[in-house]
Image (tube, rainbow, N blue to C red; front, top):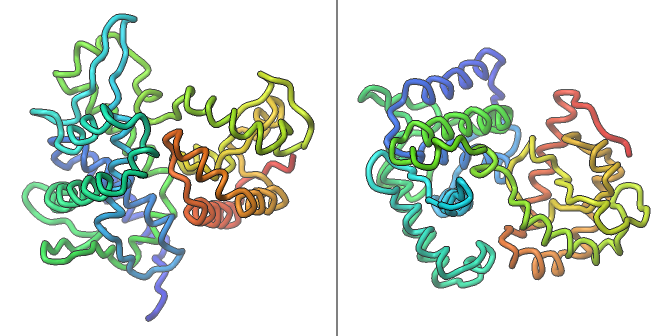
Length: 335
């Protein structure tokens, strides 16, 4: 098969098409935003920088949806007295969200839900069916006409096949797509009249919907203190209690999804200086070795806190991130 990398003009047209869908498409729920984010993240985790097709399982897309909506299905506390689960649909609450809300009453974290294999498998199957019937079918529909540039929809297919060049473009423009989708998602939530009792309080909606949960990160810090013997991952100096922070080794700004193997503990100075930069190759190798050596401990102790702990997935994301750095000459932090 000829590896046909899209030209600069074709890449720009792809990005324009994403923008067109977000600006002019019809949205009755937030599912389409979730689908675009999911496809972008899966292209990173399962794809490569080639112009070839990418075959995706609906179950993988469903898992991404569950990760996204697990956070969205938490009650939003407002005005110090009330709380409400944000409506993700123009009418009744979105079906996927209702399923997640129900399971949040039983499982305190996504990690614990994943461990209940029977319930988890049923949830993934149900969500996969909804994803196929709704957002996958209608994402590329513009004014009643199909505008197919990501994939060709076929109801009879058991997998979703991204068109040639789509995988490459999703990987190249992942950060832009995430930002565009999050902005449109937040706007949709704000304009939904049923959310007015909460949103009239002008909360920090972006933080609630998409940023890491601070309490969960504090719990991760307690695990990492032991794993790292309370030494900074970067400068290796002993840290005092309260003078450290959980750092996303692959910066959240590049890949805004929490995975257990991506966390390291850094002292306040290193954490501030590294900020949203990628660390040098020296630290990349150190991080990979740490994950290989302590994989089972990370899986056992961090997954129960609600985070996906998949070493191979984390390393695949890192491979993508460092390739982006080389191609786009991103600044690096040398420690």
